Every structure is written in structure tokens, then in C-alpha cells.
Length: 114
Length: 113
Image (cartoon, rainbow over all chains, first blue to last red; front, side, top):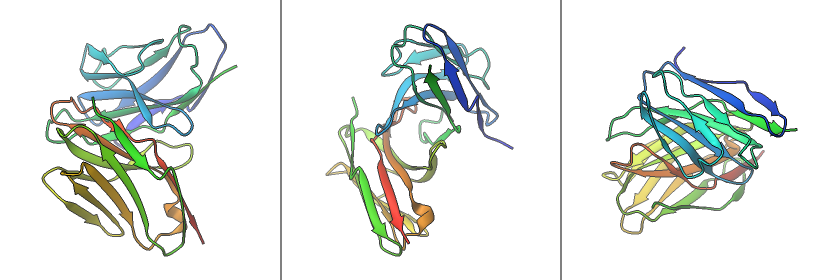
């Protein structure tokens, strides 16, 4: 099955801890993205990567970090510097074609700070 | 940068009626406009998209229209069914923006049987 897999589905974090959310895709897409979704809000871009070993900050990158060591994987670390981390996190991927930016999403990870 | 406004934030219709959701965008260079459907606890799923060289696109009960001059685009769902109930998001991106989509805040559609 081709697609994007996010894990875990639910994640609980104690205050002051770092946690890492996993995102893996087997669609052979060059570009990968992390979005944050809060209730009643649209999706806000945290980080994106157009190619292996390169990534760029999105609109709300503070308190987050990413790596892109493999084409298939784009893990997101929520650090203790993120003051309000409770949210639904969505990973997406797309082809790098300039004519098409169709993005496919994973099923999300719901992070709760306890 | 691009800004996408979406209206209404909630929409309730009777089964069989039509539903229309509207979005406006600010960047005249935007050229790709997808619509996503998100069911509770799941990731968004692409349902239809339109590019700026086309004014209208239809796929069974779903259609999208684009007015480049006015910088707005709309989603039309005809003969609504209870399974159409979900949150719908519009988005926009422009050539050269490296695929980054700017999303509207979503419309919660409820279809009452």
C-alpha cells in the first residue's frame, strides 16, 4: 500500500520533555511538510523539506525541529521550548513538480501535554 | 504573502440540498486551488482541485469554480448525503512557492437526514 504513515496516533508528553513524531512515505515524493491544526483553525505550516538534507521553516517553526536524512522520512521533534504543544499534527508529502502541488496527508498524531 | 479566507465557518443543510463554500485569496500569482475533506480524527483528503487556466471543474456531485479576476473560488456539493458531513478546507499555492499550500480555516458541514 502506498501512502503516508504517521505514528503514534496519540502521544502524551510531560511538560519539559521533548517528543518526536514519526512520518514515513513510500510515494517517492521529494517534498514533505509538517502542519499543526488547532480546533477551529486551518492548518499552519511548521517546517517543510523539498529535498533530502534540506528543510525550511514555515510560519510557526519556533519550538520545533526536523531532520530529513532519508527521502522517505521526515520526523518532527516538539521541544520543551514549544509553550503550547497540545494539538493535532499532520504530515504531508507532494511531488516537486512546479505544475502540480497535490499534497497527500497522513492520518495525524494527536499530542497532549499532561 | 498569501492569505486565504473561507466562509462560512459552519453550514447545515438538509439531505438532498446543495452546499456551497466560498474562499477568497490575496496573491494574484496563486495558480493551484485544492479542496480537502477532513473527517473527525483523520487527515485531510483531497477531493477536487483546480488550476488557474480552468474556470470550472466537476466530479460527480462535486464542482469547483474559479474567478481569477475576483480572486475567489467555490466548492459546490449537490444532492448532499449524511456522509458528506465533515470539515472542508480550501487552499491556495502559487508556482514557485515550492508546493506550500496556504489553507483557509475550514467549514464544518452538517448534512441532516
